[in-house]
Amino acid sequence: MEFSDAPLSSEMTANTVASDFNRKAAQWALIMDRVATQQTLLEALKADMIEDLQDFGVRDHKGSYVLDLGRSYEVAGKKFTGLKYQRGSTRTANTEKAEQLAKEKGLVERLFPAQPVFDPQEVYVAFQEGLLTEEEVDQIFPEKTTWSFVRVGAK
Image (cartoon, rainbow, N blue to C red; front, top):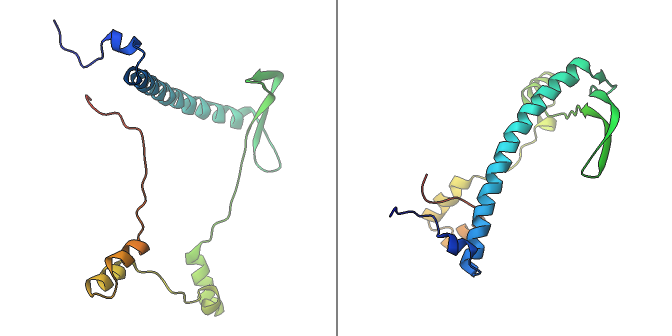
């Protein structure tokens, strides 16, 4: 007789709270595996489609690539006749360039006003010096709890 950690089949088909949770845990693990596999396939498919859209699509005025599929498709109740590799853009500040220009134009004080900066290490120094209590430090650094499902056991 072989030893196994797997539950007996009668445990998986029994109608108990434990067996109900065991079924849910097994279903969760199976779905997580399927999602990971599907995500990998989806990323590869998207990479191929991006290349196709760039090669065969029509570029619109915003820089996106659009490809007409030549017919209508319906998936999960949603119809579509084409695909778009949509371009989006945002502006972020180049602080090095801003500082260079501010110095050249005499705008440093206006573009880079002095502002107080929080120093978390000083909180602990003040605590060690007796200037802050442990309760006050806890108020400054409140505990944040996160939860996640994790498989445990054999690897």
